[in-house]
Length: 204
Image (cartoon, rainbow, N blue to C red):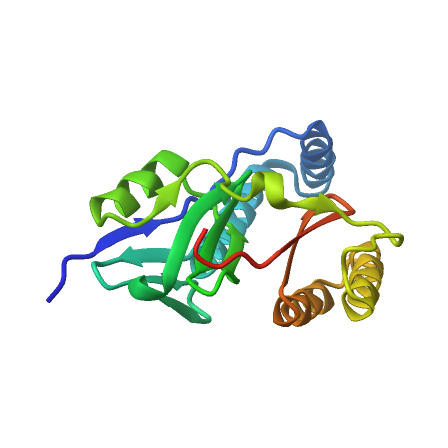
């Protein structure tokens, strides 16, 4: 049985928004004026209940990355993604997104995970995966506009539809269109509402 390097993502964040503080203060004042000396106990009970369900939600959405000599498995509790070592060309970070590129040149994964890059780097390098903290395709991406002539008519039409999906925050539609573009040999990524593209490059 192969050794596994298991990395759990970090989902807990520190909240410091003054609006939350103001809201909590208002709720506390209301409870004090309504329930008097029972307000403190009630707040503790409410906090425990909210905390309990928050932990359950966070843990259920927190993926586990399992790395072995033959594959990488990312399991988020709802689905499990497996990437075979022999089918991986590059693994790198593009800003905060973890990207896995296949030997065909297509992106197999582009996703943000709450995990220290150094931790993931060590785990991948322990198994000699082609991992880099630097995007090797950075100079290949170009900003898309409606007047882009390098892409086919079909690709430009998809990019236009994708721009609309981004504007309307239709995540599933964005993913579906990205898959269609990939079939046409076009890789796309976003910077806020701006779309950047490059052609598929096998065996970089």
